Amino acid sequence: MSKIIKSLPFFVVFAVLIISFLFLPMSSIAQEQKNGETVTASWLVKVAPGSSLSGARHIYGDWWEIKQASFSSLILHPNVIQVQPNRLIVLDDPPPVHFEITNIVTDTYPNDPYYPYQWHFPQVQAGAVWTTTQGISVTVAILDTGISHDGMDLDCHSFVSPYNAITDETSLEAVTDDHGHGTHVAGTIAQCTNNGIGVAGMASKTAIMPVKVLNNGIGTEADLAVGLNWAIEHGADVVNLSLGADCENEEDTWPECGVEVVDEVIQKALDAGIPIVAAAGNDGKETLVYPANHPGVIAVSAVNYDMELAYYSNYRDGITLAAPGGDSNDNNQDGHVDGILQETFGYAGWGYYYMIGTSMATPHVTGAIALLQSYMPDASSQLIVDALKLTARDLGEDGCDSYYGYGLIQVGDALAFLRQSQLQSEKIYFPRVTNTYGSTTDPSFSSNNNFNY
Ligand SMILES: [Ca+2]
Ligand SMILES: [Ca+2]
Ligand SMILES: [Ca+2]
Image (tube, rainbow, N blue to C red; front, side, top):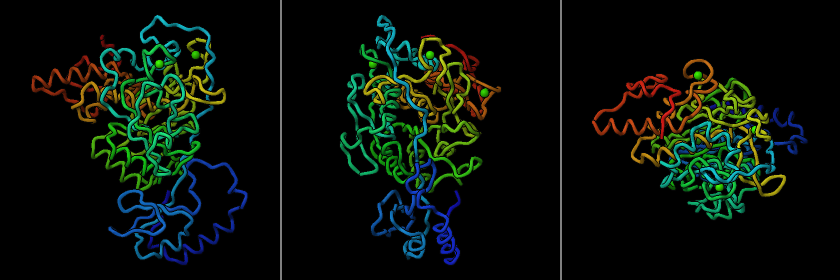
């Protein structure tokens, strides 16, 4: 996206606006809202330090959001330094599939009856670590459609610092999910586990911070910036973004395909050591949505049951890690689509649904980070993320690649890596964790090793 700089001659701006209006069919207003489209007459405005903008909402730093305003009037405003369009973020995950219960198994650990249908947890070694860590004392912010807890399975949770970034309300009611997406994502991160009900989650003892930035699956980058800043200010240890804005052109990347106000808040999170995990997007193309394309953000692609890139998953240089997002085949032959199973509401009311998408892959990585943060609270986020990268299961071409990044996360191996680094640090000796794929001082840390618990 090209930036619109104040220094553009006024007559050029005026001419562009006139031409835009001439060619804007009125019917387009009623058309379906597309991901990455700019919001009509809504702008992100940077003002001179210390000044403000009447009628505008403060977003972050020197940035304000103003609606129902014309570009030409803003650019002439004496306090205004820069004006950028405010893009739409629209969810585009494939439709959910209701889980029709067939065979119930209850004599397993965990005892959640539908856990055997969650093939995606063994694929990332999740169950292997639950006797060691369940994410206690970690807060995960989930910026999404909100979270509802009218179902039976998410009942064990108390939510912390709920916030609706669109309406600036702070009650649990204000973060009610009106879509089903956020509740499903929350389940993958922290569903109540071994409670004899429904399904399991990656890090069941983490605290969930619900931050609603999407209304009916649609929000803006302004809402994302406000929500992210809230999460940072209110004690989030890790942030899940199962969302993103499409770039104007497929080949665009950061920083062109980004906005400065969100970049500034992302930098604030990185400075505070808070990892941000974001979905690569579901276009099935060589492109990354924003903010997954930001170099400081952990970008997640999706694999299916066979550990191949899912048909819908975006890919490109910049993918950090892969995680299960599933697809609608039944390659594990359990009589159900190979989706990610969680409790939420949908076309069949409250129940358990398979959903597929990079939105579903992302919370596996976020949950893994929460598990590791809980296991080693003093570890830097750099060490935690390195543990996941260096122990990931290499897929596709050798080493880090643009489809799977460092590979499919293996949280059991990552935990063993941290344990080993802890033992070595007690001997005042750190493993040389480098960015070179799989290269560590200890040969036992090569990828694809199976560690025992
Ligand atoms: Ca459960
Ligand atoms: Ca299946
Ligand atoms: Ca690879």
